[in-house]
Image 1 (cartoon, rainbow, N blue to C red):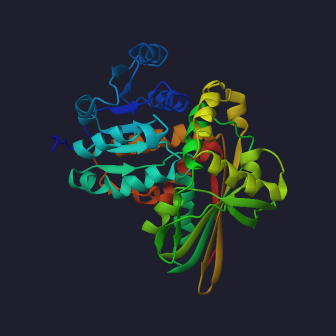
Image 2 (image 1 turned 60 degrees about the horizontal axis):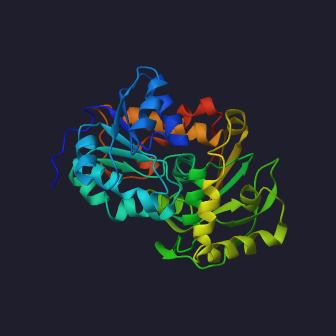
Length: 372
């Protein structure tokens, strides 16, 4: 077993720092005055990034196939932030090194299978070595997981919970698009009768009534992280995550939306997936700052219990900027010697959900929970 160190000692490592979201995270951390190390595979790109940041932070070029090098890098850190995706293809070396060295870990993945693996594969060694692992800590799915915790508070066991997403003005980065290829291949999990089960090919979930001004929208099953994380801190019999299909297509395709999603998932299990990946690689890296800031999102959580139902709503803006801010906020809190949780954790287990959502107010985030 690798030598471990007391959590809370050392810098914050940002692995994958030269990517679109990684650069936003690095800038946010340096503006907070945090001691950071920019890490990844290309020293040239890392040094170029460091030269443009306050304090000209240290850099470390360590390839993902250098397990000993990753352990040496991460073992001296208080926290490591994983930004190198798609995570089901590239994320394992970093989270494994964190678990083995007892280093707190956050990542930006939106890939449900990777979040599930953080609990099932790396949670036990992380807890044994004193590390906290929090996977999926960006826009998706930290606010939704925390909203679910607040909506379910004091309700007792739930019969059903639905988490619904609607996003307008969203421009995906290349990294997000590549991760989406992994997400729509199928095999995602659903929570039914108190256990995780493999979902079917059909993605249609009918319509969902979002608050005004969105209104009723056709929705599809969303392979969201909350399906994995929420049942770890909320007693719920069945849970569904859905997304307003117009958020994905940008067009009001009506009843064609769900079949189009299902067909895309089947296609991504064929050689077409490789072609799609090559086409994505030719796209711009991500939205410009003005376009990025224009994105708006709404997350709704409906909790059904024996006495009725309760709704929580969270709204906000700037999906990628919010992700960078949330990661920086979480990493700086974890870097404190007073931070105590260990093991694989849901966002609402890693941090007090009401307090953390308040910290996101600079991005217009606010949450409203119906009273009991």
